[in-house]
Image (cartoon, rainbow, N blue to C red; front, side, top):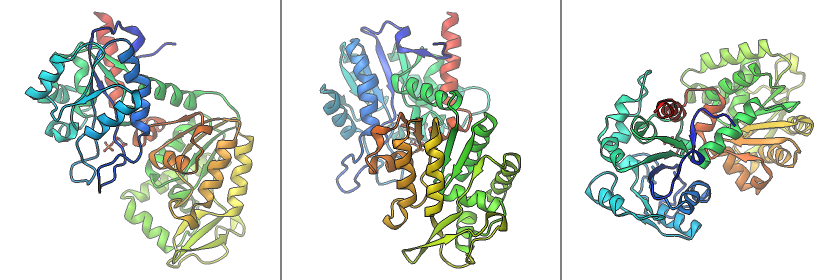
Length: 427
Ligand code: 3PG
């Protein structure tokens, strides 16, 4: 297969000192620091780290956990323990990133040994140097973190797809100095998401829910332009499209949109343009469930063309789920589809009263014979919660990264890998 970045099979790895960027940012119990969900750690450990260890490389893992100020902004010691457990092999942890302790441990490393450095976001460079200057990655390449670590390594493996939309030194800074290779997780994510973007399969469906409405309108645009047959909407995304088509979703939901999305007017107007351009391809709920003091209240849209729900929604109850009729309509579409891409839940699925729409729609996706790809942190969590994750062809490790990739946005990590291939293939 023709790829515009280097992969592990392109290199002799035995005895090579390899810096591996993974994304093991995980849910952590703030009380005792225990890792609550090891999905990302498992994916990197089983796919890339084990592969490199079997090839007898000298492996140094770098990663981040959370952001400064959060309760789960913790060292990576427990992550290293968890990875050891998963691959049944010691992953030594050093509470340092690029100072003397880390360098000594890196230099002492033997073939087939694995070392994990500390949370990269403990270093100011990773926090402060994160904007793309629009041309190159020089600011990131010039950081102290990159300058002191890069000379220690033969190769840089970027496996952190879930952070591929970020432009931090650990993601893009090493690629001007050392050959940069996509790890197995990165390679697989790009391959699967490309398959979802380009692959044939008619009818093809895009199911968009959740609260990242701005990204979702971009994803919808990207897929409709590429010829997707239908876009089914739920969650806040549906509220945007309902509003864009002139339907009153009630003051409470309207206020939520105004408070949550700064440029809501622009997004609603983009959604309106899409509805006008693709009138037959965008599906919206024709009934909804309101959260009236914690209780579910179903509301039907009498006639879609009448642009009004049966009852006046200008009260204090927000829209929290899609209704039963909509679920039935959406499941009919899902059952006909040959390719399904899903991103975002249909409602506030964390609350039992309002989890019905998401559960029914996601169960139908899992049962479908279609090629199925799901992405986004909340979506993956919902598939996990309902015990459906093994029935999906590809669940992306990425939240924001998956959404950005599907929306066709610039991905600094992937761009750095491409430029690196051009540079090192010429040598
Ligand atoms: C994620 O969890 O989506 C990634 O680890 C990126 O984290 P960030 O949004 O804090 O950069």
